[in-house]
Each structure stands twice: as C-alpha cells, then as structure tokens.
Length: 158
Image (cartoon, rainbow, N blue to C red; front, side):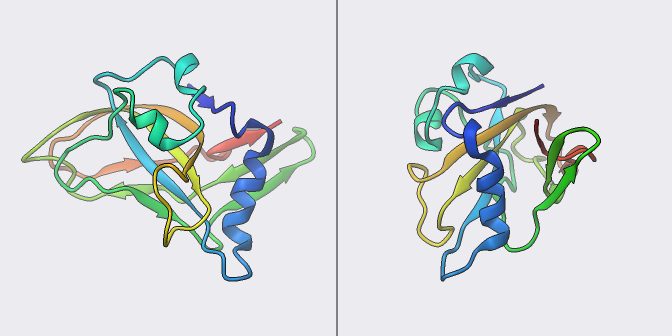
C-alpha cells in the first residue's frame, strides 16, 4: 500500500520532473528515506505532515541498522511514461540497494519514503517535501536490502 502526502498531491509529477530538468544552477533531487516499523504512525496521520522534519519529529524514525544511509536520486534518472491507454502518467525511479544492511545492528523497516529536496547541496529536513510512502516489510540481517520499485512506476498519477 502507498500513501501520498496531502502537501504534494497536486504536483507530485512536477516534483519528479524537476529532478530531470535541473537547469539554471538548481540542484533538486529526490531523497529515499527508510522508516522503522517501531513507532510508525498510520498512513492517515503520516500523510498530513508537510516536511520530513515534522514527520520525523513525532516518533516516526529512520532505521539505525549498520550501513544505513539516505539515498538520493538526481539528474536524468526519473523515468516519465505517459500511458494514453490507461489515462495515467507513470513516474519511475531506479531501484535502491543498501549493501550489507544490518548484521551488527539490525532493524525492521516498514516504509520507504520519497521526498523532494529543492537543493541537495544545502537542503535540510525542513526543506524536504514528503511525496509518497510505500509499505515494505524488511528485516536487516547483514545481506543487501534492495527496494525494487514496481515496473508500473514508483508513482502513478491518474
């Protein structure tokens, strides 16, 4: 299951396009953030947060497993497919891998959050706009943790 955040529902496609169009010295990107299962709020509460800082300030936490880092997607790496037959636009991202995730310190992860950062060089969590969060169910154990976005796109705009 996925949830779109109220703050960005009206222009998720625009945020994804900014990553590919980064012109004029701008450095926009998407930030991929994992969220721990412990303390995670319900989707109907999560989708009300307007920034990543607000979301993480309420008990929704990033994992602390060994080798966890946030991932960034920037440049011409977002695939936009207009599906005239299905009357939708598919927005896809490259799959993400956390090599040797866990082992020493492990976590159970329940969400992958995609957020927009208007400037990857200077952005803070207060600048990050949450776009969507997808349910996942993963427990780290020292093996690679791979998030594969669905072939129909990480986001569908109907």
